[in-house]
Image (tube, one colour):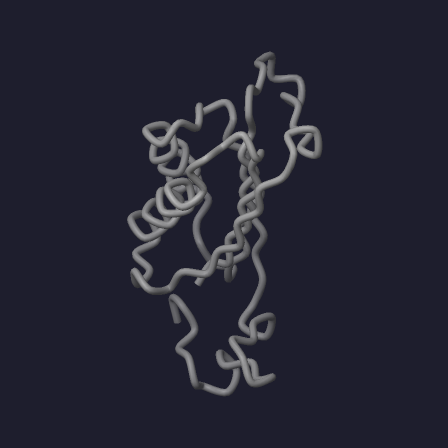
Length: 131
């Protein structure tokens, strides 16, 4: 159950396509249910997004910043497949691979509440992914 935050410039006119491409990549690589979709999409002025190359020697043109919050436990190789799948899925909707920036944050069952002020993974209302 990833929570995905997507920030992009207001020059991009297809936020739903971008969000769907990201979700489809996560479903494909992680095998989560199709309706296990939690995304926050924010369009902002391009001047409010700063994403340089970190010394890798390339230029970004219109970055899409993706933050993935999910339960810990996935292997490094699976995460790397996810990063590649997201970049591949975004290219057909107009996001160049060098413009894809992903931050990945892991946490535990105790860190989620899906409503009603309860931690449903802890109460047993939801099964812990991968358990």
